[in-house]
Image (cartoon, rainbow, N blue to C red; front, top):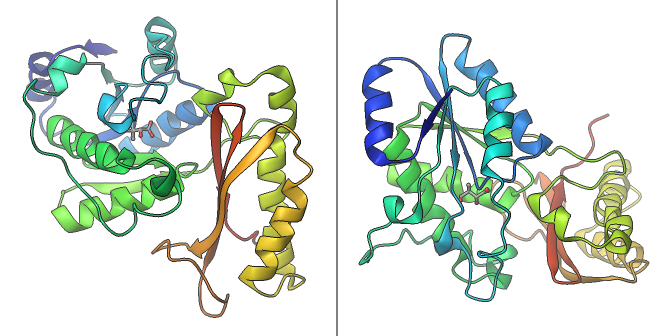
Length: 285
Ligand code: PAF
């Protein structure tokens, strides 16, 4: 596995690997089983002779000044071992100055899908994500890029970015990986106190139970579903709900009714200062 720290390293590696199918998994590091499952999916997609490139870059422009950019975990050595163990071909792990010019003055801005849900709580966050992902696509030039479904809004936005700016890359979604008690894996789970960690699965459980109610017909409308969710989540004594929405799975528009739409249930909640997000579709029978 190659460790690429600079644009020049990346460009040399690309020249040597020209014509070989390339699958990109962008990450901010602090890798867990959610990421390694994306590496496995990427390897499967690339084939044994293809290349899987992971990026490890904590992107400053997607963090607000009061957020956890400085505290975000950066265990590079352990991350590289995980990449190597999963058959990643190369890791691009640049410094901030390698990615952004000091006088940078252009951002990629999305104005429709990014305003609600997490975008409402984190203004500017998705412009930062779209900007860095556009740059990573330009730098690494992948055929395919894989993003986790846990960040459902991010995934929808990146599909939109690719469509609207004509990036020649195919986007694949990686299913959310969960702990045994249902909590979606996230690098931020390590911030939780033992009490918060014990309570955190209520987010996934409430989403899953409401989705099951919709699928069985017991919950007939989005407003009933909202009430069901709020009733269940009220049992969380250490959490504060940020939002719960039922949206169209493709456009992220809030649903007034279920008819003819594919619903996605999506929520975020604070456990102390830690903001966790999760989402589910309807269970298949
Ligand atoms: O999901 C993430 O880890 C980040 O938002 C991403 C896509 C790597 C961009 O920094």
